[in-house]
Image (tube, rainbow, N blue to C red; front, top):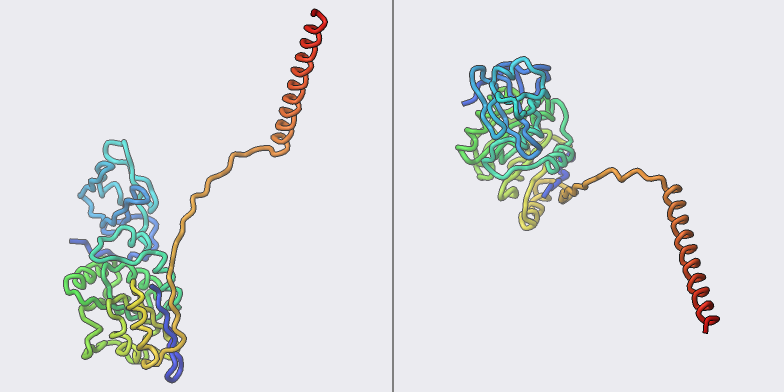
Length: 309
């Protein structure tokens, strides 16, 4: 959502780990001990792994020693100990994290995440407020978007989920630093965004059951031109959110549903259209000639029978 100058704003609705030596977004070429690796079995089966020398990974493809991962380039193929099957060792990205994370809640996937990041107009150095951390799927994409000079303040009302998310951000090298994760309910009337300066936030995102309660409290945080986005599965939630925007100073609300349709594309067999057409015509001529020859033979036979009588 865009917070316009003065009182006008715009609103968009989009329906035990070892600490690493650096951020998961660092682009080292080779895998080191303590690094986060995405184990790719196939496009439906991926898992995140912290490399701990001396340990062994066991999955449906066999056993894989962590020691054998150290020193390999990201993207390399690793054979199982029996040499029968293999996995790929991929560099972690927010997209791969989304595909491999542990679901503490329902999560946002790439299509919605892409639209949200686009509509929030995020860039390096941006300051973002997120409420509804959940499993941290979107949070990792937001953290990448704001870069090492930006800041993501993310809030989760469930204490257990907040603690788990805090541990993951720290393990992935994002906190402390670009991500600050806290436990709290941003929908409570007495809620205060401690440590977040008023007018110093570039964008806000709410994935909450009742985002309309959070909008008025978050509005003063947004700078002029800042944007707000909420994610709601039900149109009734959207209606109630839209109803509070004007009073909070937002304008030009937009409601968007993101749908993805995949297509299977296969290469058509290569054919010579001219040769194929010529062969069809030749077959037709031969068929016609054979039919005519058969008709002549029948006529001759009939004539011969008449003469014999």
